[in-house]
Image (cartoon, rainbow, N blue to C red; front, side):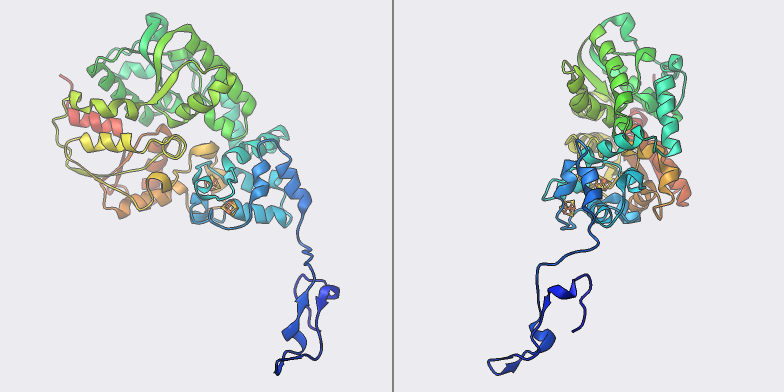
Length: 427
Ligand code: SF4
Ligand code: SF4
């Protein structure tokens, strides 16, 4: 009797001679199996994951593989919920594996998963345990420490948080002087400190002033919204920053919080209410401006072909796909073209869920950065401009344009920069 792989020979039933309706079905042709025993299955490691609060749905996976073709990390590597599940099932300890850090929490797998295996809950829960055990990639730990020390992941001085306003060329009012405003503009870290983020902040300040919007910023009283640190496993740090920001919001009267960063939008809409910050409505700048484009006096024809990258935390996580497109379509001389992966199925820049600070770690596991893959997709459309509306994306994509040797072929701009270009020089 021949041995079938992974099946106990004792459990194989086979008759040496059988003739059925004149047909010879002797030997292995009539082989039957008792219930299979799979030797390589390791329930302990799976239970170690599903026992963690928030990670229970990991155990619901029934290996249908719907998630794999949509996972942006798998496109450039070897990843996705099904693969992680199978690796854990066959002996991988997720708490000690690089798999814990590769997910960008882009949510594309959850969109298609029939069992609602929720990586957006699973990953932060597992990472939180890994953080508690001190098992964190060094580059991420450094960012956590900078956020603790300075209130921002860039390690910049908190006192200089509003220094960018000097470049605005217009008045950018502080809430501590105004006390109340229609809109409290939460600027966030990269738009406050990163040179390319500052470019977008300067542009938005000019637009808000042009529209005579009643707004104010927190300046040095603002700390990182900390959503990405939360998703990367630092729940304690997130709560500390959230409590600080909620306290600031409570000091002033504002009808809405206006954000530049979809990650702040996500935190304020879905996470801050759990900590007592349920008293304000939050709006992304594209949602706010889409209906006011005609008031901007955009007379300068840009004459460019533009493709747009949907930020995961504006699109899939918060359902806003139209506002950025409506803005782009209103700009004179913009020819909008879509990439194959867009809207609900948009690719990911690789910056979400802590990925912004894990490029070194990721380089051991992917053939190219996610941002590089996306730049190649943008180039394929023949676009001159890759338009974005998340502050993590400008620098990621600009680096990717250089590293894929596409300098001169594609420029990366925040939508608000294109708006201001079309408004022409200030009078
Ligand atoms: S789509 Fe869901 S159920 Fe199917 S393999 Fe992926 S995680 Fe498992
Ligand atoms: S959330 Fe995104 S990156 Fe993470 S496993 Fe799902 S599809 Fe892949």
